[in-house]
Image (cartoon, rainbow, N blue to C red):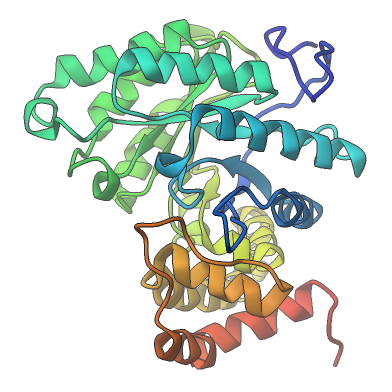
Length: 351
């Protein structure tokens, strides 16, 4: 079926490809820049999107890790078109693209949703505007009105992005998110970068109820409501409470590891003999996530440079990672354990 009749690809043709939003691992793709000009480095970007998709990790573009706030409208569209072109060229036409469209006002957010759809995005993810957090944080009706209007006007389904650290401390609670899931048929999930496992459990319980979809059908049947963590350190536990995976920056560094962790965690819910191995993988991922997350965007890009030969630095005013810190990050036992596991799972080394 067509995904809301949106335009996909770069030639302006209407693509009739069903790209369902599925449970699993998504990576917020970094935006790579040429060192002298800070122009988009599309060659590295396309290579990275394809690399992760082949590991069964799906792309989220222009999010926090992708420095969406540092991108113009036209650059966001260029990234979407570039990713779609690269995926299609590799026979990965069924891999969906999630695009970040969060910004300051409701009006501009809706504008970005329309532009993302026209460029070929299948889904969008929207963060609460944090500039006026002093007004919005305690105003539940205003917060709900923002997501309701965006979802009503967006031509593609919308994922709620709950990240207090990037939205002036605004932290949507489980009641608000569950109410939006019930009331807005074009909202298809939530990313919980608040790291609140209790909140994830409560929302997952609500949307996993046997009658949820019969009572609250989705506008797009390809877009069920997914409850996704924002870190890699509770993927295993979240599967046992009907969570649906994660959108995590660590998937850029260790895509095979996180894809394997998710798959074996889901299987372990029914087959308890798999639980020790799932716990082992989770422990390695959790330690690596804790260490690498502290290095933020610049540290992740440094690790990509070490692993794949591309990465570079963030756009100014974000600074590059300190060289001494970068070396200690690479040498950290938690990082090296993760790199060793990733190489084993990707088939780059054998025993």
